[in-house]
Amino acid sequence: MRIAIIGAGNAGSACAFMAAEAGHKVRLLKTSNHITHDEHFEKMVENKGIYCIDNTTTGHFTDSGDNVEKTFQPLDMVTREPKEAIEGADVVMIFIQTTYHPVLAERVAKHFQDNQLVILIPGYAGSIHYRRFCENDPIFAEGESTPNDARVVEPGTVKVLFKNARNSLSFFPAARTSQGMDIAVNLFPAYNIDRKKVRKHIFESALHNPNIIVHTVGLYVMYPMLEYCIKHHPDEVPYMYRDALSTDMAWLMIEKLDAEKMAVLSALGCEPIPYLEACLFRNEEDLTQDPKEVFESYKISSPPGPYSFDNRYVTEDVPMGLVLLSSLGEKLGIKMPECNRLIEMCGGLLARDFFKEGRTLASLGLGDLTKEELLSFVEGESITLNQNLV
Image (cartoon, rainbow, N blue to C red):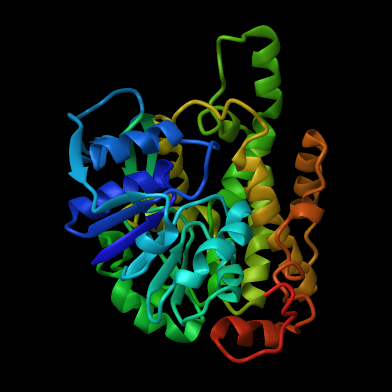
């Protein structure tokens, strides 16, 4: 297939390599300038492809060293021009921070084509922004996590640390789920899952994004550790997974936040899968294992950091994830004390109003809909919306 990947950072670069390695014709599009990964992008332009250190080929998932020699995959196109990358592609995969969805949608959605599969990873219901600017009729999909965990380690080279065993998708409108899955299963093995495990709609995928829980709680609990290291041990940095997520405080917060998330999922007619069980499904072939024990094993190989509280783990996953969760809870009449408290505390530490900045049903143009109308909208029925927003 012809695949256009938007986003030349960690996830986009790794998926570009994986797709090319699988025999797909890959076009890599960078839409930002002078923000991040510019030197990396220019190196890929020069090389007309990408190098990769795939640590998963040996069964080891570690950031401590290079388990294999780096290999090269040529790419059909490495460009900054949306039109030439998108038109004629069978699939478009978008790997950017969800905070940039509204701006990017205005630039690229006009190039989407009929029946083209457009996958947002992560999504947080961002498909709604892109559909607003479409001139044709693509199929939108949203993933709850990337197919891999990867890092750009030097210009032109990405290191793959982990690959998901499975990835659930949702489709927008949900009425096109079968059509979308027929395309998606040909992308990566992780998408070739039992059709019963495909998410019902984009709100279900949004709430099963693991970052909505582990990034937000993890970095909040890590805040005093970061402060301590900065003041007393400036040459050291704590590890979020190894250190912050080893505390009782973190898991008490996770359990409470997860309970609120599952209450919203139930009210939306979705299966209320706990965070750890959803992680086990994504990450492990053997589903008979204890989910908490498996999660604990990941800590051993997790990379250090983040190095600052002012990080996308907070600045993206709080306003785009937690605020959306809070907004859904309010619409459904569900109390969200843990969610709202975490939003307020994270915003207070950065002197930002994440409730005001964040993605809500109102900011998506869905604020006036009833629960029934909301579900009808994501399933594909025609609903009159606030056209200034959607």
